[in-house]
Image (tube, rainbow, N blue to C red; front, side, top):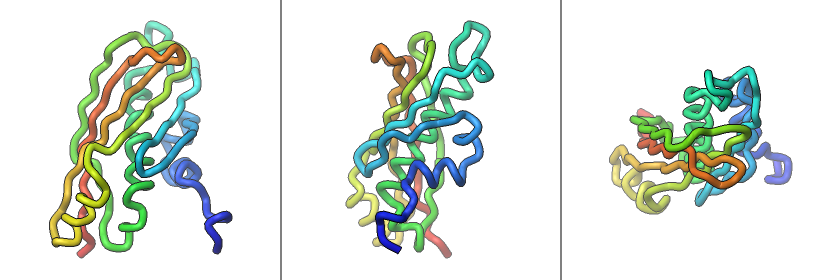
Length: 151
């Protein structure tokens, strides 16, 4: 199968993660350097003030982190499984309308893979900014991931 017929990471995430489909997340960029995921404005997922519910924003940011992890470490899936270890989110400003999560790795791919090669279980942070359409940062999230070696 050529790379032209392989599904994109966004398509794989939407197919394998039911919450990504439920929230109609749009994976607009997925590389090992950055993942960008957009959540359209959807009244079914509003909170009491008319913006996206905190749980929906958490899922948006976590999905962006998962996309960058897959882009950066998808070639390691034969020997390790990526798992979220812990997450922290801060809600900074009122989010209204569509929101976008932009994720970036906090360590180099080579460094993480070198630890895996050494028989370790590497941990690495993914930092995510959640923004409104006007560019204002409405939330920030940090998720620590690990690559758990297969036994």
